[in-house]
Length: 220
Ligand code: 5RP
Image 1: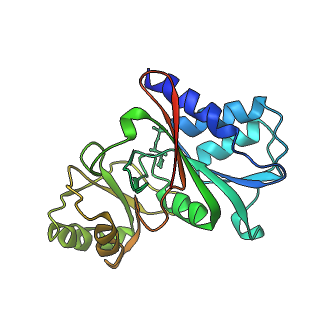
Image 2: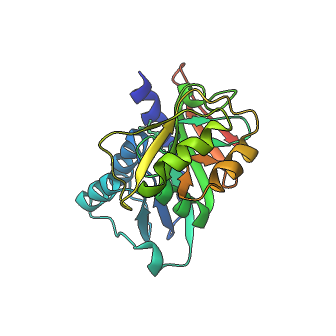
C-alpha cells in the first residue's frame, strides 16, 4: 500500500518540473518511482544532479544527462523523499545513507520538493525512524559519548561505508523537542560530517500520498 502512495505522490511531483531546468534527485524508493515516471513523460529538462549511486545508475539507464555538482552553479528544484517530516517542513533523512549528498544538493537548490506517503508525516520527529549521522571513523567512540549528553543512544550501522568513506551512526527513539537546537548541537561535535536532521534547509513543498489514495500538497 505504501508503495502505491509513494507512486501517486511521485506522479504529482513530476508536474512541478520546470522546462529547461537542472533538477536534483535524491535517493530511496520514492525517488526510484519518481525517476521511472520522469523517464516516461516528455519533460524538457537540461539534466540532473544525483545524490546517490543507486539513483545515478537508474538515471544512466534512462539516458538522462547527469551533471557533476561542481560543474554547475544552479539547481532549480530538488526532489527527494524523507524518513519523517513535521508540519514545519523539518525532516529526518538519510535512511539510505546518502544524507551528506542530500544536504549539499538540497542546500544548493532553489526549491526543495519532498515526496512522501502519509506514514512519514509526524507530529514529533525522531520517534518512528532513527536519526542517522555520518561520521569520520576515528571519531566514533568520542561522538557516541558526546551524544549521550543529549540522551541519544547511537548505534553503528553495520557493514555500511558511505560514498565518502565514512561510517553511519543511528540514534533510535530520540525525543526531538527542539529540532533546530538538536541539529546545531550534533553538527558542532567534531568528527561529525552530517546529521540527517534538516531544519536549516527544510522542504518548501511537501507532496503526500494519503491513505485514501488522494494526494495533498502543502507549501511552506
Ligand atoms: C535516503 C532518504 C530517503 O529519502 C528516505 O530514506 C525515504 O526513503 P524511501 O523513499 O525509500 O521511503 O533520505 O537517504
